[in-house]
Length: 85
Image (cartoon, rainbow, N blue to C red; front, side, top):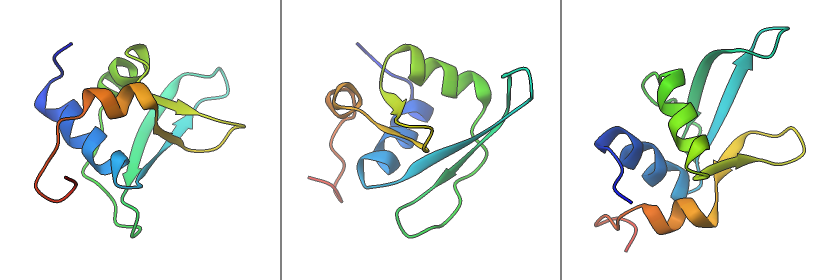
């Protein structure tokens, strides 16, 4: 399954230990998604649409109400980059 460049960039950061923090309304709808690297740096804005696409592909998941992290399926989808080979 092919993934877009934006999905690839997010999965690459998550594969290196990053996380996604999601803010939701009281009704459970997504307001915004913030990405963080393993060092704590913020990523550029991640569109809720991109977040939903990654979640639908089961590339990311949240456990016990924590931040979203990459899954084994996500690791299969991400292509290797020079700094994570």
